[in-house]
Image (cartoon, rainbow, N blue to C red; front, side):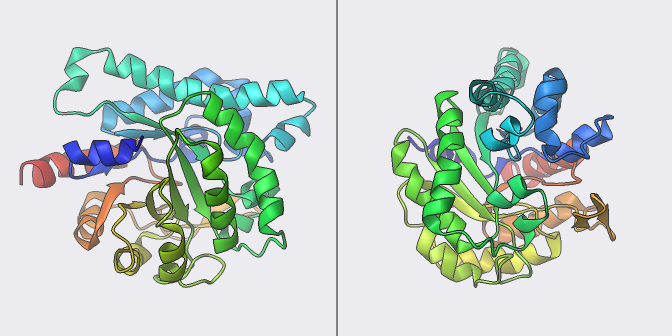
Length: 316
């Protein structure tokens, strides 16, 4: 089953949602915590569902769950049992599915739309460390150790029945290899693999993006491959480099262009997304077929993106 291929057979471009964690902060959540957005799964799950719902209304075809920084050891470090940790991971999928199902139950929301997908977020090992390692890589772990880290979370999320996995903000080839090695354990699910990048041609760890793409993309359960939480200015070159070595759909969802400071736990620098829809036109022209936003983007950015898609892609 490849829901991305099925959806792209109906629409030329899929719209992803935007940021979850920074949107929760914008709505009053204090995420200065090792669990980051995952703490809201404990404290205010209804708000997570509301954010998902707002992104669907804005035009998103795909919701990414609140499990990016949610891990079994991370929850257990807070005093929860393993069973409680697994239940919270599965809650992240249930919230997105509930928002999707409520949206799709309204006939007016179906006009010109595909039934939205729910992608279970598999964040990198670096997110669990909560030290910015997802923007550096170089964990010092073997592929076998990374497989052991990711397997329990992937199993818990798979049992909650998402439409696919979103393996995102992956800084290095080793972690991508570990995730791809795990996919056959979940034969009913496909995944996209999305790297963090340091510039227009390298992963965050420094490997040529074309090399890791040509290695990872051929796996039959990799439904799309791309880049996220990376500055918008780097995307055109990254997309072209990936397109040159694979026919798989390219997924991109940049951050605002600001830089995350893991010590101060804040974003610094200037944003680059005032013209989000105009930039999306460049990414689409370069070859991206799944486009959304990452940190610091909002439902307004997705609404502008969706309006451009209707105006120029579907009816242009």
